[in-house]
Length: 79
Image (cartoon, rainbow, N blue to C red; front, side, top):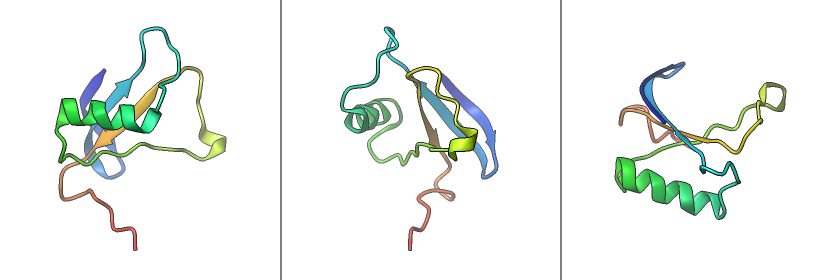
């Protein structure tokens, strides 16, 4: 599922949901998400996953989310 007009605190982003049809966890999660990102959005696209504070966590299914922002938002400086 892809929402290409997702409003966030950093502006509009593309929000992509990934879930296996059998609702099982993704094996090799990182490499699978990277492969999906590359196939759908391109290998040079930067995407992020969001890990909320424990108090805000909703984890009722094996669903993974990635967000793609315009190039002027990502990548975030890490230093």
